[in-house]
Picture (cartoon, rainbow, N blue to C red):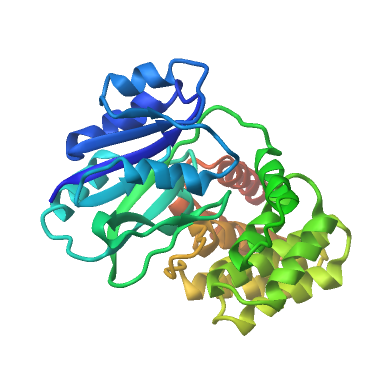
Length: 353
């Protein structure tokens, strides 16, 4: 089958070649829609493809992505952002998938590296769609594909490496434009509006938006993530009891996740309740990594609970057990600064006894 890569870009000269070099060998067609670059983005794109189009930006990411999709001729359409890459193992697996994919759409994993050879955050998104299925993007910002039918999942990671810093209020401005135009946000847009408020340092306003989202409909993974985010809002506002209740609310949607357990441990540890905190950190280790396709932080199922159990055990007067937990944390991140610091501390402590 013929695979078309479809991208929207603007002022991505610093990262675009890196992305296209990783994906071009396995794509039969590359479509790039430029929304108003003032740097060399279009020239870089033209060195990979002749299908570079100008698109008049109108504060709507979904509309821009739909335009890019409309210019493609492949059997299947793949989308990437300019600050993402397909590392060689992922590219090899995707090349093999081209020969077998028959579904209407396919979900791939997005991974954000932690800078130490691991993954800080992972989640799934529909990345490939069958062109004739006619799936469209929705949402001016934090857009997603309205895909249905037969949706496959592939063990392929798109790696998000990041790029130049953007205006941190860009997405809030787009939301404001949508609201001014009379658009009522759906559940997903309400959730992401709340996240933008929190990321931009407005926890009180974000708390209200998360609460509205949790009262309505929505994807269960977003509900769980909203509970954790709401707890951060309450923490920022000094509302510790509300912080704890928001986290416990997540259990109404699914069995305990490592991320929620770690957040509960953090809440109790910061309150000086070390024995209670240790319970939740141990539970995080028992439930293991989140595999649901929602936002997963692998450190919450290994490195972090071990590290904080070290702190809790030391605070409870058991230095030997604390040192053992630190060594268990080292299995995940042998060269981590905190692990090395703790190891040196315990070596000095035990040598003095």
